[in-house]
Amino acid sequence: MVFCCLKWFIGLGSRDVLTKASRSGNRSTSLVWRRCYHRTPGSFLDPEMRAFLEENTEVSSSGHLTPEIRLRLLTPRCRFWQERADLWPYGDPFWAIYWPGGQALSRYILDNPDAVRTGSVLDLGSGCGATAIAAVMSGASQVLANDIDPIAGMAMVLNCELNNVKPFPILTKNIIDTELDNWDLIVLGDMFYDEQLANSLHPWLRKCSRTHGTKVLIGDPGRPQFLGHRIHGKLHKVVEYSLPESTRQENNGLTSSIVWSYQP
Image (cartoon, rainbow, N blue to C red; front, side, top):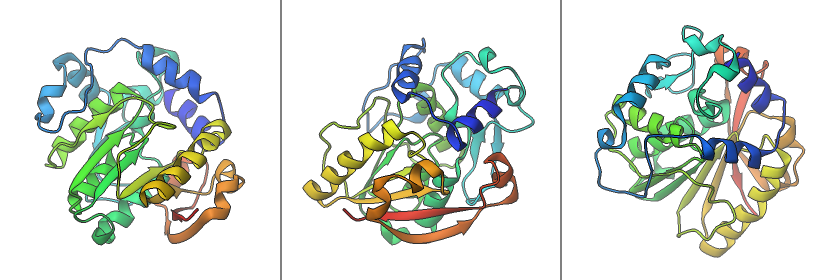
């Protein structure tokens, strides 16, 4: 079952993230993504891919922390919730789940628009794009969503349309360990599920913070891989949210999600 495999992977399991990135990158897609700040969202989507995503996801605004945001997600009423994982024709659809760390970040930004207003925001590992959408809704002057999966980028376009949000640029390549522009804020949710990835993220985030003065907010529901990592000693707890019951059930019984400020 597609959903069960995803839940195991990001809730309890671990696997080589480079293998995942390679597999996603080798999938054939009908679209090449580029940095583009002025194209309309519809122009990014191949009609067949749009139809596939719309047919195999459900628009949801309930069961998560941000009912203001409508998203196309994989739900129990969708075909691939119960289908064998190998029948899904693309890379693992992590973008189709609204993970609890992303929920907490999005809720915090909506409740505290001053955290992003008139500033530039990089949403790393954006997935469904909810946190990037929350940043736009809250007045960020510039938003870039980043995810290694091109299908996630296409799903973000649909989610922008659902929320009547001006489209933001989407970059679908691995930017960890690369030189970045001077962003006011980097947000990342549910990214510390794998030791190898966490070990790459920590020094990169430290460099971004020390070089540019970039603020970093991390959302996580308390996964062991995150709590046990050395980055945890550099974090300040900002806010903790109790998760809705449906999110708890989908995430191995995790009951809350926390927004942390990274302070190297």
